[in-house]
Length: 380
Length: 87
Image 1 (cartoon, one colour):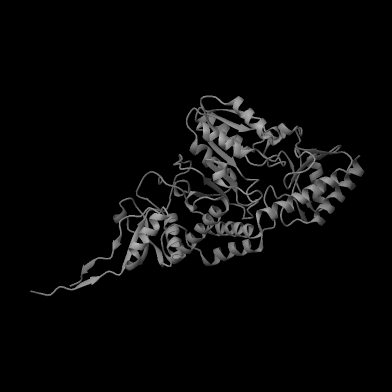
Image 2: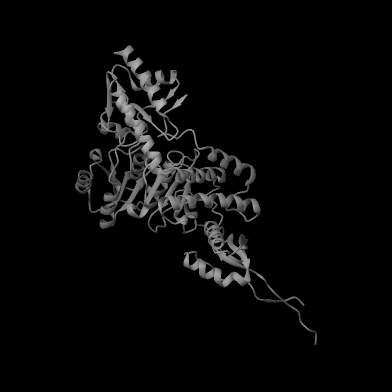
């Protein structure tokens, strides 16, 4: 089996991640941050280790790291928690539904409006110009992905952050496809918050995500409940991270995510990303020999480990099935990002996405290329 | 007149409002060679419900408070360390 869907969730994980999850389930079975007996303390220790690994990876304080279930959860907490009634919001034209849908929901619940700015294939000057053209006096929030989830387009988040800081606009970055692939320094981003999955480039287990605040905020709460502290009060605690962490958190999953980040720091983000880029460039080179292939969004040289394409004469879904029959796992369709597909002009059936991870090999690329060449030969 | 007996408390608790900050305090102090343990504090003491703190030797208390202040861990008023009438 060749797994090439790492942009959805990375697989396999480093061995130490599996061990950390199992060990925590078996040995640290208390409820973290609920009570102070030995097992509760050791479970709480797992949560804190996860926050600390994130703090070291992204250059922030451990208390500004909110543990979430996934990136969508993190984005909902950040967007809805920091949004003011009647705000005008800007999002890019390559956003995932995890940004588009919460923002659209705010138009119904908080009387907000939103506009979409062009990603311009990541060209910094063009993106900033596009944002400035859409700004209004009541623009209070800009949300942008760091890297697209369907192709290698990378938005100039540092420049957007600088613009937002200058104009006093809240800036939220969706780092789901960049965390673990690109070095991120929260201070350089000047973002109010960054959100990411823990189970993609950070190599943690599914069911993990992070919301990290880059500036001091006491956001509105979206979920209320037990927080382990200030329990006599009717309101959630005013301080982070407990304010946004109602209910029991999973110590085993947090331990797995902590281990994923520890492994990543040991291997080095540059090592991981250069390997992924090498594989995607090699794959693109192979694709250039395949008749009927159309590549999207990556120009000629892929800038990330993700390649998006279609093959003439066969739908994306059908091509995905054919690859699956050849024991190759890829993702097809709209990838929960219809806005981005519209921007890239892939059509209503979307496209096929191949996304490489650290554990993929050159042999995987050769096998995929070979199967595609055979299929293309049969179809065209 | 009966002689009174006093016992000096050797363990102190530094109250810390949240479980995350309590974990941070424990780790921060460990890096400075001070052993501490996260403990619960009764709601009757905090007046806000469940509370947390780090228990440590009273002789490390003053130094610990200074270290935690430098590391931006807000602490409450030290509990323990006084003389208690046990007669």
